[in-house]
Image (cartoon, rainbow, N blue to C red; front, top):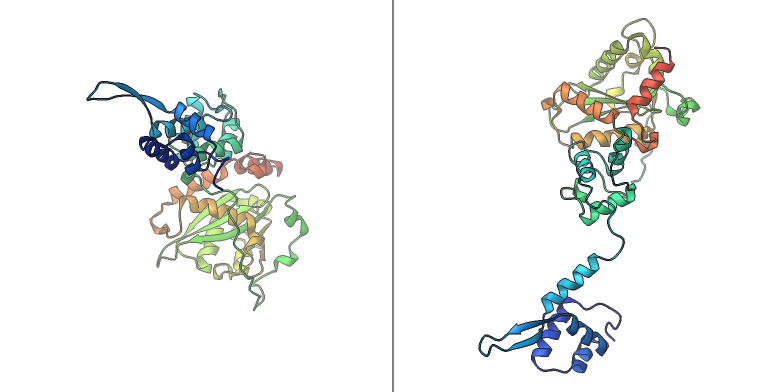
Length: 347
């Protein structure tokens, strides 16, 4: 039967103008638009304007469809509660800087404000901030500037079966305390690389309890380069390495094939750590590592030639990741928690 309880569209308003110019009655217009006749009367009354005929200089009232549409849109936008942000330009500028220049998510930007002790006239929750961004309240931020769309649908893939045993000790034999994340010193390790021929790679390690990230640049993804990179990390930590790196969990990639040298210390006799290997095609068993890799990809998208990335730039990304406030850590940073855990060891 039409739209007795729906709002008039812009096309409906142009129809009203055309039928009024054709001297149609209000009843005929209502029948054409499938609305009540009182709707037509109210619409014409709200959108009247005085027209001055250039020939006769006689004023007459006419219906203005464009004016009616503008008034409708303005009234629609004014519905609901007023924006909390109001004229708090300092708060808006702070949020815009955090998202655009420091690559924070909206939630992390609000967490930074608390960590830094910032006081603004405005106080909003995360969902309200996301809503404001979607509605275009901010001058320079849109949804395209956000690092990742929320609630993205997960893609499911068929899990392939294992055709050979792991290169070292299976993750099935890893101590239960590692799974529960109740103790410090258990890491996940992976490589981030480009498929471009001759491109260098990054060795990335993530501590499971604190989410502390270590990123080491490598000339390639060979087992030899991986061993040498881990040797450099051990030398930096010195005697503390054994207590801070109790276990390391990796996948079955060729870069982790030399388990004997990976476990052997480069600064003393004996082992430096214990390696465990995930099941094939089970990246979720290194969930923290995979999550951190996504953060690195925000700075270095797929296809990046790491041969053109300096070691200093890599360390800047490492620092950015470690000082990013995390919801899972109670909006604290990995660096803060890591230093607390290291201090508890007596160093």
